[in-house]
Length: 270
Image 1 (cartoon, helix red, strand yellow):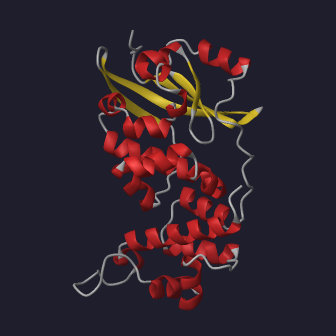
Image 2 (spheres, rainbow, N blue to C red):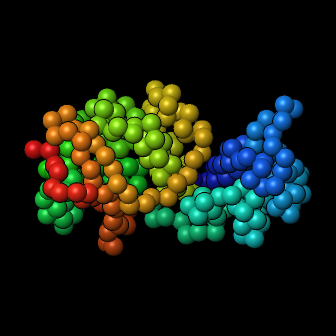
Image 3 (spheres, rainbow, N blue to C red):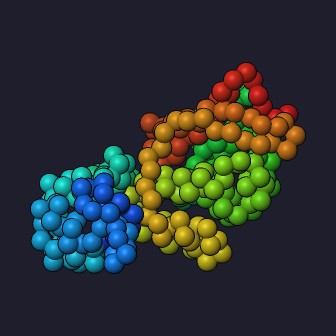
């Protein structure tokens, strides 16, 4: 489990990142001029949120202080946080239930989950662990992304594959947007366990080898998952359109099943 100090540091880093990205005009302040950088100053965030500038500075520095839910709600309003970002901030401060301990990523997929994946014939589907290791998939997903069956098990992680596999980059016509959104969703889900997951070998390797991942990681972007249309440019089947959905298993809360259903007609690679 991440330590309280790690959660405080993550909270401070997240608040700094959001403050730096917020347009002053969005909160009724004059636009940034030649004498100031973009974003809000700490003093401005503090004033707008009804707290002292010193106290807010300590919060961004990760000091051992405990903000109330009311103060965090005020900061969320000032920084124009989305619902997912607000939930993330509250979870880091201890105002949301901690997620269940992650099971080992390499464990075998339960039989009933394997049968569920196989039953989704024609709909690419896969299961992921809390660190986004792909733990199971069906034949339709293997047809969409053949490398899933041959990649080294230690690298069969959705973030690793999205940021490092050229096949995935070619498969996603909107790779620049999608890759960053995946990471934003990962951070939103990790919440107070982010310190543990950030120390995983996969994340450390990505930080060391992928400049794009490193930049996106430092951006602290948070975005909740939403069902949405996805497009893929398959090398033999052409452009495929699916709706992406995700399910949580009641008896396996640490696993999620991602399913792609055809958006129009029955497009799938053979």
